[in-house]
Image 1 (cartoon, rainbow, N blue to C red):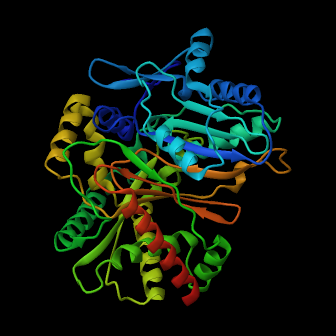
Image 2 (image 1 turned 90 degrees about the horizontal axis):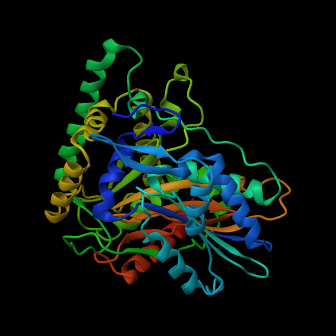
Image 3 (image 1 turned 90 degrees about the vertical axis):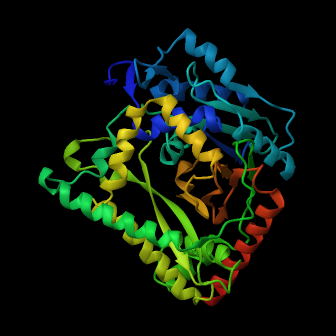
Length: 450
Protein backbone atom coordinates (compact mmCIF):
# COMPACT_ATOMS: atom_id res chain seq x y z
CA UNK A 1 0.00 0.00 0.00
CA UNK A 2 1.56 3.29 -1.13
CA UNK A 3 1.27 6.55 0.79
CA UNK A 4 1.61 9.94 -0.88
CA UNK A 5 5.11 11.40 -0.62
CA UNK A 6 7.14 13.86 -2.70
CA UNK A 7 7.37 11.35 -5.54
CA UNK A 8 5.03 8.42 -4.74
CA UNK A 9 1.25 8.76 -5.19
CA UNK A 10 -1.25 5.93 -4.52
CA UNK A 11 -3.78 4.84 -7.12
CA UNK A 12 -7.48 4.98 -6.36
CA UNK A 13 -9.77 2.05 -7.16
CA UNK A 14 -10.55 3.28 -10.69
CA UNK A 15 -6.87 3.66 -11.51
CA UNK A 16 -6.12 0.13 -10.28
CA UNK A 17 -8.73 -1.02 -12.79
CA UNK A 18 -6.97 0.83 -15.61
CA UNK A 19 -3.66 -0.85 -14.71
CA UNK A 20 -5.32 -4.26 -14.91
CA UNK A 21 -7.15 -3.46 -18.19
CA UNK A 22 -3.90 -2.36 -19.85
CA UNK A 23 -3.02 -5.91 -20.90
CA UNK A 24 -6.58 -6.82 -21.88
CA UNK A 25 -7.88 -3.80 -23.79
CA UNK A 26 -4.71 -1.70 -24.32
CA UNK A 27 -4.12 1.82 -23.03
CA UNK A 28 -7.31 3.68 -22.14
CA UNK A 29 -6.01 6.69 -24.06
CA UNK A 30 -8.03 9.92 -24.33
CA UNK A 31 -7.02 11.68 -27.57
CA UNK A 32 -8.52 15.15 -28.04
CA UNK A 33 -8.17 16.36 -31.63
CA UNK A 34 -8.44 20.12 -32.03
CA UNK A 35 -7.96 22.79 -34.66
CA UNK A 36 -6.97 26.38 -34.02
CA UNK A 37 -8.52 29.35 -35.76
CA UNK A 38 -5.16 31.06 -36.39
CA UNK A 39 -1.62 30.01 -37.30
CA UNK A 40 0.49 28.60 -34.47
CA UNK A 41 4.16 27.73 -34.66
CA UNK A 42 5.24 24.17 -33.80
CA UNK A 43 8.03 25.50 -31.61
CA UNK A 44 5.55 27.48 -29.53
CA UNK A 45 3.22 24.50 -29.16
CA UNK A 46 6.15 22.38 -28.03
CA UNK A 47 7.21 24.99 -25.47
CA UNK A 48 3.72 25.23 -23.97
CA UNK A 49 3.26 21.47 -23.74
CA UNK A 50 6.66 21.03 -22.11
CA UNK A 51 5.64 23.67 -19.57
CA UNK A 52 2.42 21.76 -18.95
CA UNK A 53 4.43 18.65 -18.03
CA UNK A 54 6.21 20.72 -15.40
CA UNK A 55 2.96 22.22 -14.10
CA UNK A 56 1.09 18.92 -13.72
CA UNK A 57 3.40 16.37 -12.04
CA UNK A 58 1.13 13.43 -12.91
CA UNK A 59 2.12 13.87 -16.56
CA UNK A 60 5.66 13.01 -15.39
CA UNK A 61 4.48 9.88 -13.59
CA UNK A 62 5.06 6.27 -14.43
CA UNK A 63 3.21 3.27 -13.00
CA UNK A 64 5.52 1.43 -10.62
CA UNK A 65 4.88 -1.96 -8.98
CA UNK A 66 5.06 -2.15 -5.21
CA UNK A 67 5.16 -5.39 -3.24
CA UNK A 68 1.53 -6.12 -4.13
CA UNK A 69 -0.09 -3.01 -5.60
CA UNK A 70 0.94 -0.42 -8.17
CA UNK A 71 1.42 3.28 -7.51
CA UNK A 72 2.46 6.43 -9.38
CA UNK A 73 6.14 7.36 -9.28
CA UNK A 74 6.64 11.04 -10.18
CA UNK A 75 9.83 11.35 -12.21
CA UNK A 76 12.10 14.36 -11.51
CA UNK A 77 11.70 17.23 -13.93
CA UNK A 78 14.90 17.61 -15.95
CA UNK A 79 16.97 15.82 -18.62
CA UNK A 80 15.10 12.50 -18.26
CA UNK A 81 11.76 14.20 -18.88
CA UNK A 82 13.27 16.15 -21.80
CA UNK A 83 14.23 12.83 -23.42
CA UNK A 84 10.82 11.27 -22.86
CA UNK A 85 9.09 14.43 -24.11
CA UNK A 86 11.08 14.24 -27.35
CA UNK A 87 9.39 10.87 -27.97
CA UNK A 88 5.96 12.06 -26.83
CA UNK A 89 5.80 15.18 -29.07
CA UNK A 90 5.92 14.85 -32.84
CA UNK A 91 5.22 17.13 -35.83
CA UNK A 92 3.26 15.32 -38.57
CA UNK A 93 3.15 17.70 -41.51
CA UNK A 94 2.04 14.95 -43.93
CA UNK A 95 -1.51 14.67 -42.49
CA UNK A 96 -4.18 16.30 -44.69
CA UNK A 97 -6.32 17.67 -41.88
CA UNK A 98 -8.65 19.43 -44.36
CA UNK A 99 -9.82 15.99 -45.55
CA UNK A 100 -12.51 14.73 -43.09
CA UNK A 101 -11.59 11.10 -43.74
CA UNK A 102 -7.88 11.74 -43.13
CA UNK A 103 -8.76 13.76 -40.02
CA UNK A 104 -10.85 10.89 -38.64
CA UNK A 105 -8.20 8.28 -39.54
CA UNK A 106 -5.54 10.35 -37.76
CA UNK A 107 -7.74 10.48 -34.67
CA UNK A 108 -8.47 6.73 -34.86
CA UNK A 109 -4.76 5.97 -34.96
CA UNK A 110 -4.30 8.02 -31.79
CA UNK A 111 -7.10 6.18 -29.96
CA UNK A 112 -5.30 2.90 -30.59
CA UNK A 113 -1.82 4.06 -29.60
CA UNK A 114 -0.23 2.22 -26.69
CA UNK A 115 1.61 4.28 -24.07
CA UNK A 116 4.26 2.53 -21.91
CA UNK A 117 2.75 3.35 -18.52
CA UNK A 118 5.62 1.80 -16.56
CA UNK A 119 8.19 4.00 -18.27
CA UNK A 120 6.39 7.29 -19.04
CA UNK A 121 5.70 9.91 -20.35
CA UNK A 122 2.00 10.22 -19.55
CA UNK A 123 0.95 11.96 -22.77
CA UNK A 124 1.17 11.87 -26.55
CA UNK A 125 1.06 15.03 -28.68
CA UNK A 126 0.95 15.30 -32.48
CA UNK A 127 1.01 18.69 -34.21
CA UNK A 128 0.08 19.34 -37.84
CA UNK A 129 1.16 22.73 -39.27
CA UNK A 130 -1.34 24.60 -41.45
CA UNK A 131 -1.30 28.14 -42.90
CA UNK A 132 -4.70 29.03 -41.39
CA UNK A 133 -5.93 26.29 -39.04
CA UNK A 134 -3.21 24.04 -37.58
CA UNK A 135 -4.17 20.98 -35.55
CA UNK A 136 -3.06 19.41 -32.30
CA UNK A 137 -3.73 15.89 -31.06
CA UNK A 138 -3.35 15.87 -27.28
CA UNK A 139 -3.75 12.45 -25.66
CA UNK A 140 -3.45 11.40 -22.02
CA UNK A 141 -4.10 7.91 -20.61
CA UNK A 142 -7.24 7.86 -18.48
CA UNK A 143 -5.23 6.60 -15.51
CA UNK A 144 -3.70 10.09 -15.20
CA UNK A 145 -6.94 12.05 -15.33
CA UNK A 146 -10.63 12.05 -16.26
CA UNK A 147 -12.57 14.29 -18.64
CA UNK A 148 -12.66 17.26 -16.25
CA UNK A 149 -8.89 17.01 -15.88
CA UNK A 150 -8.50 16.90 -19.66
CA UNK A 151 -10.59 20.06 -20.06
CA UNK A 152 -8.39 21.80 -17.47
CA UNK A 153 -5.27 20.68 -19.35
CA UNK A 154 -6.68 22.13 -22.58
CA UNK A 155 -7.50 25.35 -20.72
CA UNK A 156 -3.88 25.55 -19.58
CA UNK A 157 -2.62 24.92 -23.12
CA UNK A 158 -4.74 27.77 -24.48
CA UNK A 159 -3.52 30.11 -21.75
CA UNK A 160 0.04 29.30 -22.71
CA UNK A 161 -0.53 29.75 -26.44
CA UNK A 162 -2.10 33.15 -25.75
CA UNK A 163 0.84 34.36 -23.68
CA UNK A 164 -0.64 33.67 -20.25
CA UNK A 165 0.89 31.74 -17.37
CA UNK A 166 0.47 28.00 -16.94
CA UNK A 167 -0.70 27.42 -13.39
CA UNK A 168 0.61 24.57 -11.20
CA UNK A 169 -1.83 21.69 -10.87
CA UNK A 170 -1.44 20.07 -7.44
CA UNK A 171 -1.62 16.32 -6.85
CA UNK A 172 -4.26 14.98 -4.49
CA UNK A 173 -4.96 11.29 -4.01
CA UNK A 174 -7.86 10.73 -1.62
CA UNK A 175 -9.62 7.38 -1.63
CA UNK A 176 -12.83 7.61 -3.63
CA UNK A 177 -14.74 6.21 -0.69
CA UNK A 178 -14.86 9.78 0.66
CA UNK A 179 -17.45 10.61 -2.01
CA UNK A 180 -19.86 7.89 -0.87
CA UNK A 181 -19.25 7.59 2.89
CA UNK A 182 -22.09 8.75 5.19
CA UNK A 183 -21.48 11.79 7.36
CA UNK A 184 -21.64 9.73 10.60
CA UNK A 185 -20.20 6.28 11.24
CA UNK A 186 -23.45 5.01 12.70
CA UNK A 187 -25.25 5.76 9.40
CA UNK A 188 -23.30 3.05 7.52
CA UNK A 189 -25.75 0.14 8.08
CA UNK A 190 -28.77 2.16 6.94
CA UNK A 191 -27.02 3.61 3.87
CA UNK A 192 -25.55 0.26 2.83
CA UNK A 193 -28.98 -1.36 3.17
CA UNK A 194 -30.65 1.33 1.05
CA UNK A 195 -27.91 1.09 -1.56
CA UNK A 196 -28.22 -2.70 -1.70
CA UNK A 197 -32.01 -2.54 -1.98
CA UNK A 198 -31.72 -0.26 -5.02
CA UNK A 199 -29.09 -2.49 -6.63
CA UNK A 200 -31.17 -5.63 -6.10
CA UNK A 201 -34.26 -3.98 -7.57
CA UNK A 202 -32.28 -2.71 -10.55
CA UNK A 203 -30.75 -6.15 -11.22
CA UNK A 204 -34.16 -7.81 -10.98
CA UNK A 205 -35.57 -5.34 -13.49
CA UNK A 206 -32.70 -5.77 -15.94
CA UNK A 207 -33.08 -9.57 -15.96
CA UNK A 208 -36.55 -9.22 -17.46
CA UNK A 209 -35.52 -6.85 -20.27
CA UNK A 210 -34.06 -7.14 -23.75
CA UNK A 211 -31.32 -4.54 -23.77
CA UNK A 212 -31.09 -2.82 -27.15
CA UNK A 213 -27.70 -2.14 -28.74
CA UNK A 214 -26.26 -1.27 -32.10
CA UNK A 215 -25.78 -4.51 -34.08
CA UNK A 216 -23.11 -6.36 -32.11
CA UNK A 217 -21.24 -9.57 -32.91
CA UNK A 218 -19.57 -10.94 -29.78
CA UNK A 219 -15.87 -11.80 -29.92
CA UNK A 220 -13.59 -13.44 -27.31
CA UNK A 221 -10.93 -10.71 -27.49
CA UNK A 222 -10.77 -6.93 -27.40
CA UNK A 223 -9.12 -5.70 -30.58
CA UNK A 224 -9.10 -2.46 -32.57
CA UNK A 225 -11.08 0.48 -31.25
CA UNK A 226 -13.03 2.16 -34.03
CA UNK A 227 -13.88 5.85 -34.06
CA UNK A 228 -16.50 7.73 -36.05
CA UNK A 229 -16.75 11.51 -35.96
CA UNK A 230 -20.20 13.04 -35.93
CA UNK A 231 -21.63 16.53 -35.70
CA UNK A 232 -25.38 16.88 -35.09
CA UNK A 233 -26.97 19.10 -37.79
CA UNK A 234 -29.33 20.77 -35.30
CA UNK A 235 -27.64 23.62 -33.45
CA UNK A 236 -27.37 23.59 -29.66
CA UNK A 237 -29.30 26.88 -29.41
CA UNK A 238 -32.41 25.17 -30.84
CA UNK A 239 -31.86 22.13 -28.65
CA UNK A 240 -31.42 24.25 -25.51
CA UNK A 241 -34.60 26.24 -26.27
CA UNK A 242 -36.50 22.98 -26.69
CA UNK A 243 -35.08 21.56 -23.47
CA UNK A 244 -36.08 24.69 -21.56
CA UNK A 245 -39.58 24.53 -23.02
CA UNK A 246 -39.85 21.02 -21.58
CA UNK A 247 -38.38 22.11 -18.25
CA UNK A 248 -35.18 20.05 -18.44
CA UNK A 249 -31.47 20.54 -19.01
CA UNK A 250 -29.76 20.09 -22.37
CA UNK A 251 -28.00 17.01 -20.96
CA UNK A 252 -31.31 15.33 -20.07
CA UNK A 253 -32.65 16.26 -23.49
CA UNK A 254 -29.70 14.55 -25.21
CA UNK A 255 -29.83 11.41 -23.05
CA UNK A 256 -33.55 11.12 -23.84
CA UNK A 257 -32.68 11.37 -27.54
CA UNK A 258 -30.13 8.57 -27.17
CA UNK A 259 -32.71 6.41 -25.40
CA UNK A 260 -35.30 7.02 -28.11
CA UNK A 261 -32.74 6.23 -30.82
CA UNK A 262 -32.25 2.75 -29.37
CA UNK A 263 -35.94 2.18 -28.63
CA UNK A 264 -36.97 3.02 -32.19
CA UNK A 265 -35.37 -0.31 -33.15
CA UNK A 266 -38.08 -2.27 -31.31
CA UNK A 267 -41.37 -0.39 -31.37
CA UNK A 268 -43.48 -3.51 -30.75
CA UNK A 269 -41.46 -5.20 -28.01
CA UNK A 270 -42.65 -4.29 -24.48
CA UNK A 271 -39.50 -5.87 -22.98
CA UNK A 272 -37.10 -3.83 -25.11
CA UNK A 273 -35.09 -1.27 -23.15
CA UNK A 274 -32.42 1.36 -23.64
CA UNK A 275 -29.89 1.08 -20.82
CA UNK A 276 -27.54 4.07 -20.73
CA UNK A 277 -24.61 4.32 -18.37
CA UNK A 278 -24.20 7.94 -17.18
CA UNK A 279 -20.92 9.30 -15.82
CA UNK A 280 -21.04 11.32 -12.60
CA UNK A 281 -18.47 13.86 -11.39
CA UNK A 282 -17.79 12.78 -7.79
CA UNK A 283 -15.92 15.94 -6.79
CA UNK A 284 -19.06 17.65 -5.52
CA UNK A 285 -19.76 14.76 -3.14
CA UNK A 286 -16.55 14.88 -1.11
CA UNK A 287 -17.30 16.63 2.20
CA UNK A 288 -16.10 20.23 2.41
CA UNK A 289 -14.50 19.40 5.74
CA UNK A 290 -11.99 17.17 3.94
CA UNK A 291 -10.40 20.31 2.51
CA UNK A 292 -9.74 18.93 -0.96
CA UNK A 293 -8.68 21.18 -3.82
CA UNK A 294 -9.69 20.79 -7.48
CA UNK A 295 -8.94 17.03 -7.38
CA UNK A 296 -7.32 16.64 -10.77
CA UNK A 297 -7.17 12.93 -11.53
CA UNK A 298 -9.95 10.33 -11.62
CA UNK A 299 -13.08 11.06 -9.61
CA UNK A 300 -15.93 9.62 -11.64
CA UNK A 301 -18.87 7.42 -10.70
CA UNK A 302 -21.78 6.14 -12.78
CA UNK A 303 -25.39 5.02 -12.67
CA UNK A 304 -27.86 3.55 -15.16
CA UNK A 305 -30.83 5.17 -16.87
CA UNK A 306 -33.29 2.50 -18.02
CA UNK A 307 -36.01 3.50 -20.50
CA UNK A 308 -38.75 1.39 -22.10
CA UNK A 309 -41.75 1.85 -24.42
CA UNK A 310 -40.68 3.16 -27.81
CA UNK A 311 -44.12 4.73 -28.29
CA UNK A 312 -43.99 6.93 -25.20
CA UNK A 313 -44.67 10.60 -26.11
CA UNK A 314 -41.41 12.48 -26.57
CA UNK A 315 -42.23 15.09 -23.94
CA UNK A 316 -42.87 12.32 -21.42
CA UNK A 317 -39.66 10.57 -22.46
CA UNK A 318 -37.65 13.69 -21.77
CA UNK A 319 -39.26 14.26 -18.39
CA UNK A 320 -38.83 10.61 -17.36
CA UNK A 321 -35.16 10.63 -18.31
CA UNK A 322 -34.65 13.91 -16.48
CA UNK A 323 -36.26 12.41 -13.36
CA UNK A 324 -34.07 9.30 -13.64
CA UNK A 325 -30.90 11.38 -13.94
CA UNK A 326 -31.88 13.55 -10.98
CA UNK A 327 -32.63 10.45 -8.90
CA UNK A 328 -29.29 8.89 -9.83
CA UNK A 329 -27.47 12.04 -8.76
CA UNK A 330 -29.60 12.30 -5.62
CA UNK A 331 -28.51 8.82 -4.53
CA UNK A 332 -24.94 10.12 -4.44
CA UNK A 333 -26.04 13.17 -2.48
CA UNK A 334 -27.97 10.96 -0.03
CA UNK A 335 -24.89 8.66 0.28
CA UNK A 336 -26.86 5.68 -1.03
CA UNK A 337 -24.24 4.21 -3.38
CA UNK A 338 -22.17 2.41 -0.76
CA UNK A 339 -23.11 -1.20 -1.57
CA UNK A 340 -21.56 -1.26 -5.04
CA UNK A 341 -18.62 1.00 -4.30
CA UNK A 342 -17.56 -0.76 -1.10
CA UNK A 343 -16.84 -3.85 -3.20
CA UNK A 344 -15.05 -1.68 -5.76
CA UNK A 345 -12.87 -0.19 -3.02
CA UNK A 346 -11.77 -3.71 -2.07
CA UNK A 347 -10.91 -4.64 -5.67
CA UNK A 348 -7.29 -3.35 -5.57
CA UNK A 349 -6.57 -5.93 -2.85
CA UNK A 350 -6.98 -8.63 -5.49
CA UNK A 351 -3.89 -7.40 -7.34
CA UNK A 352 -3.36 -6.65 -11.02
CA UNK A 353 -3.01 -10.27 -12.17
CA UNK A 354 -6.23 -11.51 -10.60
CA UNK A 355 -8.21 -8.46 -11.72
CA UNK A 356 -6.91 -8.93 -15.27
CA UNK A 357 -7.71 -12.66 -15.13
CA UNK A 358 -11.29 -11.90 -14.08
CA UNK A 359 -11.55 -9.47 -17.00
CA UNK A 360 -10.31 -12.10 -19.46
CA UNK A 361 -12.80 -14.68 -18.17
CA UNK A 362 -15.67 -12.21 -18.33
CA UNK A 363 -14.83 -11.29 -21.92
CA UNK A 364 -14.50 -14.88 -23.12
CA UNK A 365 -17.79 -15.82 -21.47
CA UNK A 366 -19.52 -12.63 -22.75
CA UNK A 367 -20.38 -11.71 -19.15
CA UNK A 368 -19.43 -8.04 -19.07
CA UNK A 369 -22.50 -6.01 -18.00
CA UNK A 370 -24.69 -5.41 -21.04
CA UNK A 371 -25.66 -1.80 -21.76
CA UNK A 372 -26.88 0.12 -24.78
CA UNK A 373 -24.17 2.76 -24.50
CA UNK A 374 -21.98 4.60 -22.03
CA UNK A 375 -22.74 8.28 -22.60
CA UNK A 376 -20.28 10.81 -21.28
CA UNK A 377 -20.48 14.58 -21.67
CA UNK A 378 -17.95 17.38 -21.46
CA UNK A 379 -20.73 19.95 -21.67
CA UNK A 380 -20.07 23.37 -23.18
CA UNK A 381 -16.26 23.67 -23.41
CA UNK A 382 -16.18 27.23 -24.74
CA UNK A 383 -14.40 28.37 -21.56
CA UNK A 384 -11.20 26.62 -22.66
CA UNK A 385 -10.60 29.67 -24.87
CA UNK A 386 -9.39 32.71 -22.90
CA UNK A 387 -11.33 35.98 -23.26
CA UNK A 388 -9.94 38.11 -26.11
CA UNK A 389 -7.73 35.20 -27.21
CA UNK A 390 -5.38 35.69 -30.13
CA UNK A 391 -5.75 32.01 -31.02
CA UNK A 392 -8.75 29.85 -30.17
CA UNK A 393 -9.81 26.23 -30.50
CA UNK A 394 -12.72 26.30 -32.93
CA UNK A 395 -13.06 22.56 -33.54
CA UNK A 396 -12.72 19.80 -30.95
CA UNK A 397 -13.27 16.04 -31.17
CA UNK A 398 -12.84 14.27 -27.82
CA UNK A 399 -12.66 10.51 -27.54
CA UNK A 400 -11.38 7.62 -25.45
CA UNK A 401 -10.46 4.00 -26.07
CA UNK A 402 -13.52 1.96 -25.11
CA UNK A 403 -14.77 -1.61 -24.78
CA UNK A 404 -18.39 -0.55 -25.42
CA UNK A 405 -20.19 2.02 -27.58
CA UNK A 406 -19.12 5.36 -26.10
CA UNK A 407 -20.14 8.77 -27.50
CA UNK A 408 -18.50 11.88 -26.01
CA UNK A 409 -21.05 14.72 -26.19
CA UNK A 410 -19.29 18.08 -26.51
CA UNK A 411 -20.66 21.55 -27.22
CA UNK A 412 -18.47 24.26 -28.74
CA UNK A 413 -19.59 27.48 -30.43
CA UNK A 414 -23.19 26.34 -30.80
CA UNK A 415 -22.34 22.96 -32.34
CA UNK A 416 -22.75 19.51 -30.77
CA UNK A 417 -20.24 16.82 -31.66
CA UNK A 418 -20.39 13.20 -30.51
CA UNK A 419 -17.32 11.25 -31.68
CA UNK A 420 -18.16 7.64 -30.90
CA UNK A 421 -15.73 4.81 -30.13
CA UNK A 422 -16.39 1.07 -29.93
CA UNK A 423 -14.85 -2.34 -30.69
CA UNK A 424 -14.52 -2.57 -34.49
CA UNK A 425 -14.55 -6.39 -34.43
CA UNK A 426 -18.05 -6.32 -32.91
CA UNK A 427 -19.84 -3.53 -34.82
CA UNK A 428 -19.29 -2.16 -38.31
CA UNK A 429 -18.65 1.46 -39.22
CA UNK A 430 -21.83 1.48 -41.32
CA UNK A 431 -23.96 0.33 -38.38
CA UNK A 432 -22.67 3.20 -36.22
CA UNK A 433 -23.25 5.57 -39.14
CA UNK A 434 -26.88 4.39 -39.23
CA UNK A 435 -27.11 4.97 -35.46
CA UNK A 436 -25.81 8.53 -35.87
CA UNK A 437 -28.32 9.22 -38.67
CA UNK A 438 -31.21 7.97 -36.53
CA UNK A 439 -29.99 10.11 -33.63
CA UNK A 440 -30.06 13.17 -35.92
CA UNK A 441 -33.67 12.35 -36.86
CA UNK A 442 -34.70 11.92 -33.22
CA UNK A 443 -33.15 15.27 -32.26
CA UNK A 444 -34.97 16.99 -35.14
CA UNK A 445 -38.29 15.38 -34.10
CA UNK A 446 -37.81 16.43 -30.47
CA UNK A 447 -36.99 20.04 -31.40
CA UNK A 448 -39.98 20.21 -33.73
CA UNK A 449 -42.24 18.69 -31.07
CA UNK A 450 -41.07 21.06 -28.35
